[in-house]
Length: 139
Image (tube, rainbow, N blue to C red; front, side, top):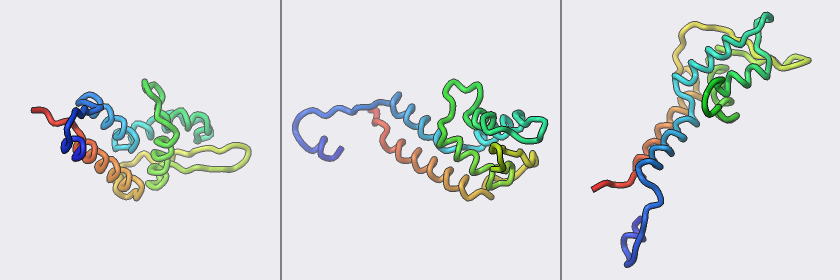
């Protein structure tokens, strides 16, 4: 921006408020928040079969967000699973013949007990600050 404003000629922003807002929403969706984690946990709990576990395919569907207009990508699903595992709300079992996921608890817990959640929250907040600094100035 400094070089563009320092010289002669024209410089045009390649984004406006709408694009900045979209970038902020996309960034926030990459880092699971309390509501996202709660929804994923409920979806996993609802997918539990008679054996008391969730098959890998049903777990994938639950973690990606059934019914969402834009399903969560595998990276976000993995972040959700990591937090839920750290909080001991779910457990992955890799016994033959297939991987399963057990839902362990429905009791309340502090998300801050998860190191991953704390790190993800910091990344979400840092990205929001960075993107807000890039918003076009209106006069």
